[in-house]
Image 1 (cartoon, rainbow, N blue to C red):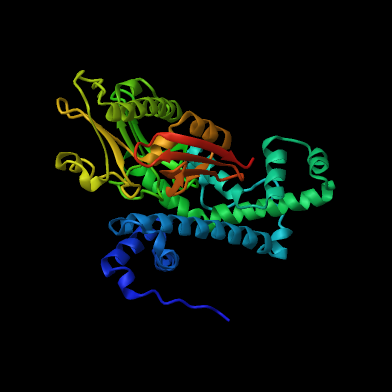
Image 2: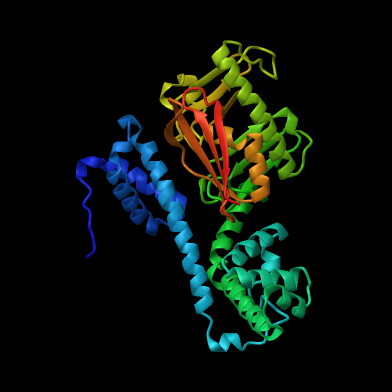
Length: 401
């Protein structure tokens, strides 16, 4: 018998529900599924209502649940697409002879996409294929390994492998020229507008999109956003203008340098905040003011410049502010964790990771926060447990392979 649940009306206000639906629409990029994601979020929240310790934090709590619901939905969509492409090829398609031409269409991919965008498109399309088909395509066409050699590695015969390669190419063709075509046209238009570029960096929020970027090596400017997680012009994942980035021209080195600086700066700021010894401003040498609090507890002059900060649902913000030259820096616990040396090593090893919503727990008799980093491609995870009050790292655990 199917089980139905009716969520009590007082559980959430109409305004809160509207905000939740909007949040789900931004995450999924599909307004038609936002209502279902919001409803599933509310059902899960209602079942675990006792976990909400602070009623004033209802919306951030719901946003965290919604993010998990969205990730489950996204994984399910991926599995369904894989199944569809495995089963959906007709006999006519299987017999098509297009071994020498993968992309046959009046839509010229090479002319409409920069090389890095095309590589990102191909990578996403390959990820939807069955693992054995993807490996065969890569080894035969990218690594240029002979058919017999690839067949031997995969434990099959050359004839069976040839059929698998043909089906794989047909599936890729359908993906790129039909199902994913409109998505990447929109993505290309977004990156082309306002000088946004597609970068080689993966989004650490969803793990499934290349970040868009703006850079200016003369000014040391580096702006990053995700076309799905932060789709609007005023929504950014990272906005920086630092002297140490001047003269750097590539996104990866700039991002690496930025993460090193952020780790040193914010960890020193935390230490000074609790010891009473403030940092000095790198621009003017004056003492910095450091804040570690929920947004509503921030001074008005700082709240005014946080209007475009994208992830204000992650608990306390850590900020440094120079009253003399007005320089301000802001970060969250998740970003602090991502900049840890252990997290950077994990990200290099796994290439694509996603950050799950922070969870509250207790360890060794103290309140703590769990930040979980999860690999997109493997079962590997990195759990970082931080003190809830000081954000000091208490323990780091790696799981999976």
